Length: 479
Image (cartoon, rainbow, N blue to C red):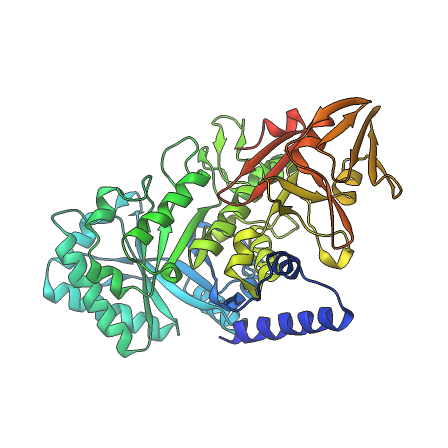
């Protein structure tokens, strides 16, 4: 709550300053274009940004954890025994230090109970045994609650991977027991659940999850990764995973999209890939050795965050220790996107457009006076004229008398006249399916027609309203 209030105050002061100076925000442009007001707004504190922190697996300094840009940290893992007792943490002082730092920054800290395995042995049989007995369940619940009180934590994440048809009944009993005890202590209960490759027919472990369980969780972290060894967490998998749980009746604000910061089958970390080659931070594939790397680069993670902002309640990073701390930081990218869309209506967020030029985001800041992209009546994307053309190195001029934009780059001359349904490329007429326009005193050009004339390839990801503009060499690295 402290973090929410602190950030809301800062953002409010920024918007007050912008208003005082007469400067429009990105969303104000879009709101004016649609003739709407932001009646229903998105507040930064409503969107959860969760970082899994596997303390025993990494040697990263705790100071690198950006708790001021997270709403939750989930410390992993607390290992149960079959009798309901707990294996002591390897680094108890680390958890205490992390909790103090997070609480100072207004972030909550949960403990993750379980995980896939412990010392190479899967934990599923341990969970099945302890959940099958009333006595061992009571023992586990008592020990977990005592642990949370001792370390002054805010909640528990249940990470039983995974109950089956024979154990789902005992899983539900464990969830109900945990929920009752944690509610008494005013603590929260969450769970790590699977993603889905279909919006209606999820994997068997997800189909088994009962409504009683789902209603008991304060929110669920959807593990939309590890689908396979190659391309294990594609964009479409994130989208269908959210839709599956929405179709199961889980409220959007309780669905948290899990995003990986590691590659398969190489298991290389995002930060290490970027250290090998700076461009790897913006790609989803790297021909690493001895195994190749399929992962999510910064641009795909931005797209997933945007999808979650539209359809879910937040994002979760596994594992936040694998992030960078420079301009390629995933946590900072998420925080920046939240800042830019803070106090926006859901309709405004749905229309927000991201432009990626040669793998780097081309940010349209209204305070620069360039305008922001939009979709016109012909369903074509329109870009403010000057910034994108000058970014690719084109010389841009505008003839006010003829209302003609002329752009020169690499010996190619492109001319676009406002209101005309064609453009000239080195004097040759090329038909367009839309026209350049002047809006709010700014000139907007059709993205695809103009950039194709300069030899760029265009990809449009409708699910995230993201346009990729790239030379052929750069475009081949995308997705």
